[in-house]
Length: 213
Image (tube, rainbow, N blue to C red; front, side, top):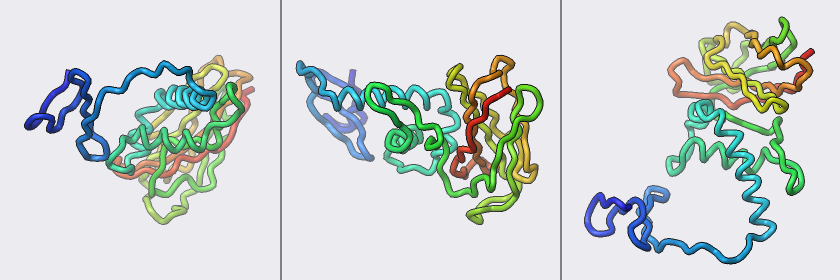
C-alpha cells in the first residue's frame, strides 16, 4: 500500500497498483513497478549477490557501532549504507564462490576524531586481551576524555565481543575478557574512539590477529 503526503502522486511512499514511489537523494521518484526477470542471473550478478550477503550479514551484528562510527555520512544515505559501501568495495577478498571478509581492511568507524595512536594488543589474564595505546592525538582532533571502543571477532565461533566506552584515551590501556571457549582460536582485534558527547568518531584501527592459548 502506498501513502500520499500531498496531492496526487506527490510524495507517494510505497506501492499502489503497478506504481512505486520512493525518496532518492532527497527527491521524490515515481516509477512503474519492476517486473521479475525471467532470465537466469549472470555469473557477475551471482558474485555481487554473494558478496552483498556476506558483508551485510557481518555488519548487521555491529550495527550500533556503525551508527556512531559512520555518522559523518552523506545525508542521502544511512550510516549503515555508507559503511556497507566502503567495506563492500575494500574489505572482501577471495575468488568466487569462496569470498571472505578481509579483516585488516574492515572499518566500522570512519571520522575526523584522532584514531588510536600506536595501538597494540597482547595476551593478558587467562582468556583476556590487553589493548594499549598512547595519548598522542595523531590528527590533532580530540581530547584525553575520548572514550575507547574495542571490538574482537572470532571467525571460528562467528562471534563478536565488543565494549563501548571501555576507557578514556588518558587510561592508555583496557583489558577485555573473552569467553572461556576461545582457547586456540584466532581473534581479530579493532579499536576506535568516540567523543564524550558521542558527536564525533575516529577511524577504526585493525590492530591484528591473536591466537589465544
